[in-house]
Length: 259
Image (cartoon, rainbow, N blue to C red; front, side, top):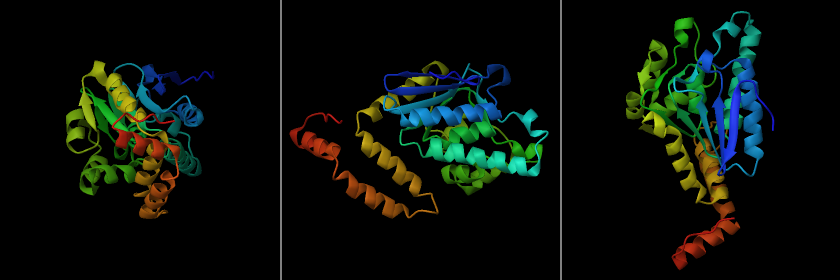
């Protein structure tokens, strides 16, 4: 399998694990990391062995503590625009629109681009020591990988304005209270809890899960009619073997055996 300079990965029990592996740099997202994430998510999204993905950071201090600011120094306006566009493409097309559930296991600092990466995932589980924020305004910038778009949808415009305009960090409990993360767990249970959620999803119909992700995402996509996407998906699923098996199992009061 491919070796990446900035990532470690594994596949076990139908779960694809991705570890951002730049611990001395608090797992900051440099351009090589974006390259590696792009390639690995493409691989996992097309690999039938992988039914769900857990994304986390190496060590226990950081999920990803922002972008690698040193790389910003020599960028032109055009290059910076392209960097932002590239981040949007990776985070939207490969992570948010992945047909497989993606859980961010936030194991420490998730700042700037690191929090934006977590926001692109379908769910977020945080350890008790996690700290989150979008501090770009303190650098004379704004979030450039979708943070200004995803955060308001997740926690509301007013709260998102406060987090982005102040650049302040919030802790895991505050993040949970405003809906930024789904759950908060102790550090040594973080990956196990993400695994537990995925294993439950794996007992459901794979094709139904993929269509549910597509329909939920369409609700927030101005380019699509979310209701039409849902209706089309609902109708399509009636023609699948999983639907026949699910209904048969329900009527027979047994556990379904989905393909």
